[in-house]
Image (cartoon, rainbow, N blue to C red; front, side, top):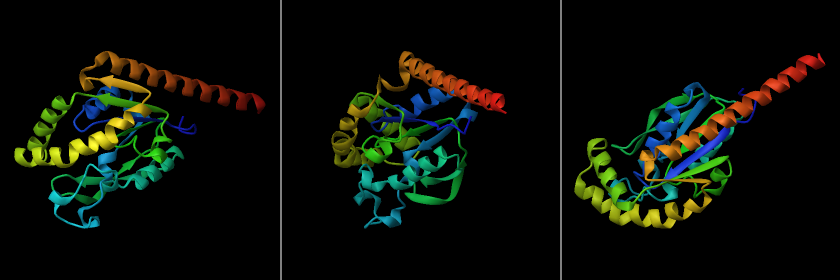
Length: 224
């Protein structure tokens, strides 16, 4: 199956909109052996690559904070059936780790991140673009919960960053990118109906890909 071009699916949305939950729900309904996963978050630049090494002075919600060119390179490689080494990022130290994760080629490639639709070269690699649309208040509550429990941040620091960069960058880059979406999922991961519809579409694409490959193999055998 891997000899045919992979189907690349982008899942975007605001910070803490439920992208990961939607992605997980889709993965739970698919055979994971058929899926390669990339998070744009893994491609944050190392702290040393910024002019200041004080995280409080860095806008991590601007596209320039991410190594999108490397992600594009990796997607092109995996679509050519090459194994890629996905970077790992530590959100507590703001550092790129030495360790990487080997990602094997697969018929389905899922790319997730808040800014993946704001880059045209990255967007152009996607066959299906999904935007997870969740109310601002709900996203802020989720972000506070996530950053305090998982990333060791203070509530004061979370709110300051939200007002200084998260909200302005959402309005400047994330919200406008919604127009590129083929599918919009309101209310995030709780929208079971929308997620099931998307998953059914992916499964149908996989079936069509399998049937196409089977026919080609049959034609080759007949020719021989």
